[in-house]
Image (cartoon, rainbow, N blue to C red):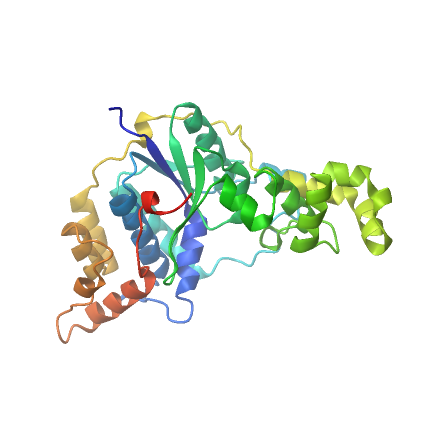
Length: 334
């Protein structure tokens, strides 16, 4: 029987930010003064995928420092974002080293965001018979889901991991098809990316309008049906709505090849990882990794040597980052 080909594509920065801010009130600082919250969180997330989901192929997508196509066309795109905290910025090279230690390819293309790289590769993989899971908490990936492409929203603070396909996306946002996610964001906007949308239209109103008209374009053609301020806003900000839709659209023709063999899950470089974990002071994480302990076994993780204050602190931090119950994809309805 032919092996099922399963590809996991991780949205690096979304997962890194998520891990960092999960510990914003109680950051994990090692003896060298390095905030390792993001690195530990990313490591736990990665280990969850490798040990519980067992993908045949995997890659991690990063943004680059180059100006993106969206910024070239709309200077305000993401211009509202605050500067990255210094301790978070300092931890990113460590995440990169972690990924390299696991022998997982890093995917990035100047001028494009990680979203675009993931979207392009997911669609190419689908044509090659893969089932792809886009690992990200970001809702804009909902536009990409299909019978073979899913969002994998990682577990967090006791909440179980969620797998979203077309049914889940459409049910959550009351859409007729996942592609309407682009129109939803075009109308509603996306504050995190500084996508303006159309003034006066929030999520609920956008859903109602899409249910009736199907798209922003059709809504704009039928403004005579609207009344009052809503009619005024749609007519006056029609172009802004169309630009917002374009900004929310994930690019699917990024100049990157789908190299199946390059994405094959390989054995990690254990010697490299051992040194890395020692440098980061990930003693309990290293113990779990090298003894192949399951992430479900929090009892063993919490057993530390009496008097080892660092080990105790790390065990407590790891327990907080681990979900109460881990499920494999086969256990999740999708």
